[in-house]
Length: 396
Image (tube, rainbow, N blue to C red):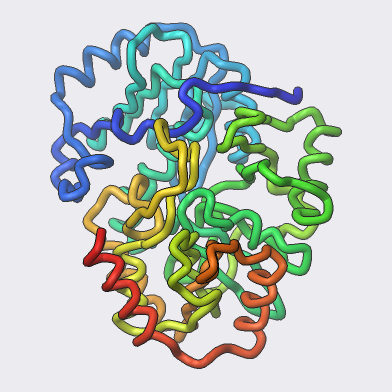
């Protein structure tokens, strides 16, 4: 059935996420907002209280070779999981690697997201925000996959003119909008894994911002939403809010890629929603400049993406997704640079934000910049944009 939900809070709660177990020694504790180690007693105290509650929905899905079993009391969140992942018919016919207990009725003053890396169990309570399940799964994968030489990436992926392309960016910078261009074949709009064979999708659903959605500016997303409505599986989250989103299966995107796996990418695009207007609309970058941009992840955080964020503000988010990448940043950057060098991938920085006059670049202009780069390439501009980035870092 189609669902509309107003959540509390209306964004993620990274300040209320804690990790547990001896494996947490591998966390990057230099980013304490997102990576903190909790007391073992606290985990088990909450775990047994939540474990004993009723869960009418038990959903099992596989992603990147890992089996997750999600227990939730909430019809709306169960539909969201079905939209975002390929759920198996019989949840008890599979041996899970990870168990997630999600309960929206449990009474608690603040959200709690507890992840036990040894026991491979996660608890989500005190929040009705849909993205907490999705991002908990991605955070777990971002911890697990590097041990198997697989790079988890907070990016979208698409094909165009016989090329495979990745698009990195923090929530709200345009990953879904740009990668859902009608001329592309969409592979995935938010989370992708890169192994020794190529890239593959982590999710089989989309979670698109609905602000400004129209058949003229976002025809692919608009049509997918209409198909989801007709099939009674659209989930509308926080309509009217700055972070309003729509969840629907990827299969309803008319120009989606039908296979889960693809070859290695030809091009990578780093998206920065530059509110200061100091970067060109697009720049080709290479070498240490690529590493520096990836490890710092300069962008502007958009309203509503996290609790308490109500205005656009500058943000440095390593790996273009710091809340979801719990290991040390160089674990991910070393893997990325090795893959870029090995497969001779072109890398571009795309400013989806403002020009020097404070006017936001039109969507169609940015789309054309990306297409031109894919087809004809550009001259390397690493030195100039790296100098600008270092100046921003000095001033932060």
